[in-house]
Image 1 (tube, rainbow, N blue to C red):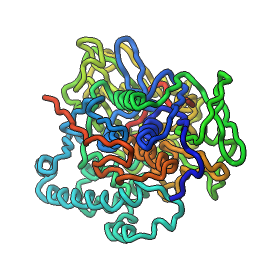
Image 2: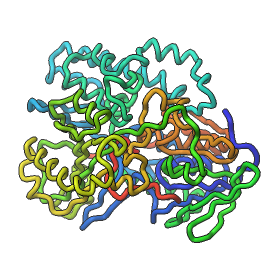
Image 3: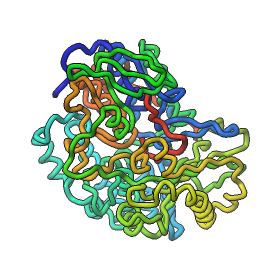
Image 4: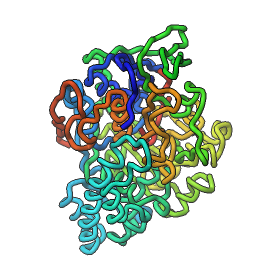
Length: 536
């Protein structure tokens, strides 16, 4: 593995999002002095926080999986996730509601889900689910160490026995066909393939290997942090500060001072100069390239994932049919992906993610009130309506979404909204997200693994990239891994493979997190609303 040569005693991390904070913790654990520079007033990046009339709104991802990856970052400095964040496993992880009126609770415990599938679709589908679950587990084991949680210096790194194992599992076939080998009910197939949307690829064209996201959702488990997902970056920043990191809030990096093929300092908008031995840019990929003054040459321009419209609604009521996370599917499926990824039209029959965080933390809303997050995928601005068009289109689309929610059983939703915040692709674009998409660069084959934008910068030997635009990709688990991989480029300490449940290599190590159960910078953030799985 290639690493930063020369001195790396003091590292400046640009951006205090999840990847930047994970990187900072791993660097601190390896004995580096770390300064984190963030343009916002506090940590979070995409996983930020907006306060709106007594409502505490997560501006980014609402679905948290694979918390062991976060615990690895805390453990690098001898700390533990559960000292900072209280996690509740969600049962069910999701509730799926379909256009025919049927509903399915998605459990991550195998026996419970098998019984639910038997109730929903019969014994043959329950047996198919058992086989699918075993396949997902094997697929995850084949991919994580070698293809996800690793730094690639060359595509030749793919030439390993694990590649043959992945091929034998059908990982290079098409996702929808592979899922269809196990289960025939089209409703069930949606539950295990919709995740490819967040990778920016339709299930009919996505590699079956992307079912690893379904493993994270439907097998490894979904968790809710008390205080919302923003509690995670807040806890990470506290742990990093306790381990000696310096933080510069409300500080925008405007340029990099270079000499002899190295960055010697970062310059802030205030005119201040911060000298450093290495720099990690965990900001938006396009912003990082702007600071570097160039982007890598690629045969084909980067393609970006679909965007999303998010309606944050503080309401005076809620609806008993909603779980913490509810997937509301329309009748259309193939047409939906055609609209989102190819034709650039708004979904004519939308599938939606509805999250109600006050299910497990009523303190996120005023007493007796409720908070709902409605995410509607939409085309990015490269292929769909432009940012300027969204300024007029946004309010009309909001009204159509509210009407659709009422048609799907959320009677009185419009009348129940007391405070709201609407986020559209123009808001993402205003934050510097390329193509107006919070999901960054899509995971086509040519933009995955060793073919994704690398986290090393040609021509500057002490600059490393982190975040969803670089390796390994989009989503909370993967951006946490991205931070660890960036730190490894600086320190050379790879530690345990991410996702192993053990801490990554560091000077001090903690123990695994104990998850509590319940009875039931450059601006790297967003103004509000980030798609789930990001989302970040």
